[in-house]
Image (cartoon, rainbow, N blue to C red; front, top):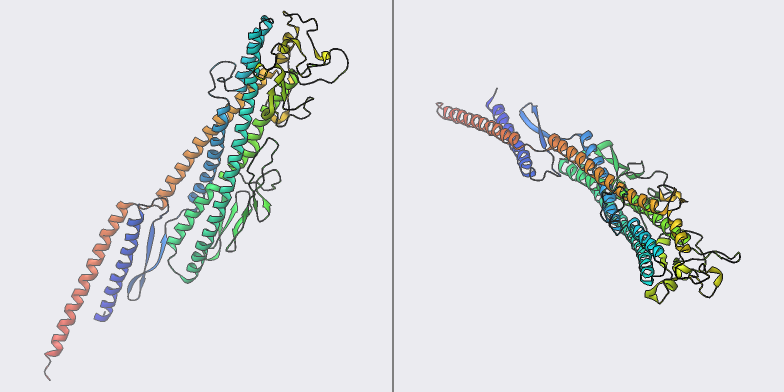
Length: 499
């Protein structure tokens, strides 16, 4: 081997060590950013004149990364649902441990129970005006409780709708960022540039995106990536981000149907979606707004409708229509034909409410809706001890009746049993969502740890690598020193050759 060849080998060794040291320095610096940084690997290859770093790659595990994405999306779904159910749970308070399953005085079931007790007291003392007033006051508490619960439901739906709007904006922003980064990676792959940092950035964008919407990815030529929703709708392909659109609804009522989210005109949420998404915050918010809250609202409306029906007054003389009695809606002159929205509108008839100038004893006597029409009077003799109507009302409360299937619970039960079932349903939904949230959070933590173990930086390994590089650098430096000494000796010998 000539001295010049040896010198080239030593120089290439120093250059390779310098390149490896640069990568090692990046790893040590990136160790503090465990969320986005992956281990970088300097790939050294032997060449005719020594060695060189031919490329820099990164540690990766696609299967584990896909688990991280799916776990992130699933966790975000449950977080959104659980948060909304926590707000809905305010309408029932803390569930008691009683066998009836009713809750504190804020729940419709508990308020109905209080009202039934007040009505029984009035039945026992029909001539006591103060007891009559208490019964009406308890009825007003039921109506107000339903009003408040309905308002909470619609507030939850409005918040979910607002969350959907924010999520769509975030998705579009992330897709634009992804497009820029993906282009850089594809171009860098084609030219052989170091794209590892850009790949880390792209993976971080994907993790943020999966929080908003469940995704799956595929990688094509030059590391060009495509993104699809978990239901198969294209979000990014061919280097182009698709547009996600949504029109928010600012005010919700029981009859309001929230708008769908679209990807290039294809609905991915709502009843019209042929390929609905199943995970991510967007899916959780849509489920909360369009299913969970709507079902609970239907239960409240069914309770309100049953109250109006059970306390309606019938014509005691002729064949006149039944009219609203103790419970009604503002301005109503007949019984409702639809229960939709009744929980937000139900109120106690002013004519029987002492706080509105009414007569509480009309609850006993009848004629609440039309005091001028004696046909709807039950206590025709005006007997102060009359309790027949009160007994009838109590029987109505306890009687088995039919409820709409839109409430998602029992369809044949007494009003109190239905209200208790509603409380139990909401508490079960909240409990299940909480448990599922904990489970998904555990899966996410496990997947994240596995990802860190597979692709993260181990400082001990890097320090060991540093020592190896120091030894390699020292060996190359000694070789160059030896070659330099040999060159000097050679030059001296040449100079000493006689002319």
